[in-house]
Length: 72
Ligand SMILES: [Zn+2]
Image (cartoon, rainbow, N blue to C red; front, side):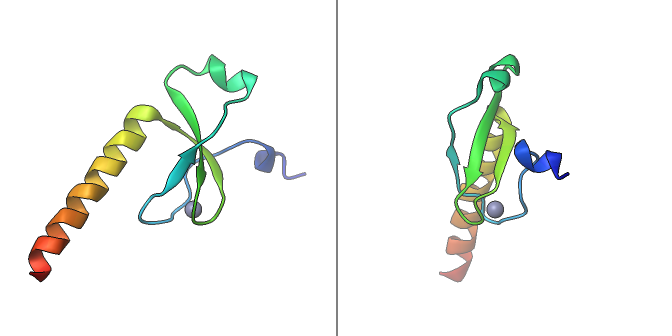
């Protein structure tokens, strides 16, 4: 029952993304480039590639920058 809850899945839908890196368990080290994160908003554990998370964070920063400029 609810086996999927034992393993980190895909990212939650929280926006903007704020997640902390987590210590990986042994089996995660078998997945090169994949990192474990925990959402600061809802506490969901999920797996994502470092590259995907970096891209997400950069996109969010750009968005925040642009919306700040528009309100000025
Ligand atoms: Zn979340």
